[in-house]
Length: 296
Ligand SMILES: Cc1cc2nc3c(=O)[nH]c(=O)nc-3n(C[C@H](O)[C@H](O)[C@H](O)COP(=O)(O)O)c2cc1C
Image (cartoon, rainbow, N blue to C red; front, side, top):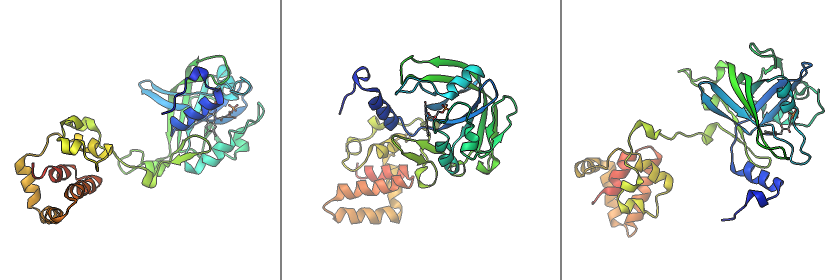
């Protein structure tokens, strides 16, 4: 492993390291106005949600590393502490990127990036009509983490109103990740798209009291063929199968035939573990354990 002491590492290198390793990051497409009412729109990926009561979002228009100047978004917020944070999905990403161009103060990035400014209900800055979720926010606090180039300016926002395009909802009224199709910012010029095959589910461990990987038999825990993800699924089971349950699992033709085949093989352990992996991939965790524990 390489080591970097931030105090001894050049700022551009640190920037590169953080952007590449704290990723993917959601993008706050922040709409502000200056005291004359001129709109400004820019994307910020140092961004996340930090609480729901009060609903808190934080993003950071940083001090520029190259000349220690501040961004218009930060300057505007110091004048008018209000911001609309618009979500960025795949349909919007090129225009959001275009709006990050460092235009002079007063240039309206809504116009530059061809997006539609829509009046907000509770604050003065405009919403981005094309964005699937728009948060009208009041800025509660700004925390400057430093005064040198590269320092963060944490804009702590409380949401006053949420606007949501109903097209992104599933039939039960929840946001469907495939429909909202958000993008994430990564290092360099990389982004990722959070829909299609990239989206998967992990069962919440809170729903049951899993036994933990430490309680799995050694031959499973130290398997050459099972990955950390496989063991994570197995450790989430509430109890190990008993002899009776294992026997029952093998009453099914599917398993007894497979095992008969494996017993002829010289790579018996490998084949059993790979079969268990297949079962795990299709969500059959208990059966995978039965297969792995057969013969115990
Ligand atoms: C996807 C994306 C994410 C960005 N994230 C940040 C960020 O988190 N902080 C930051 O200071 N600049 C970030 N930038 C760069 C700013 O958008 C850029 O400096 C912009 O010109 C600032 O505009 P303003 O001066 O009008 O506020 C990002 C750019 C892009 C394209």
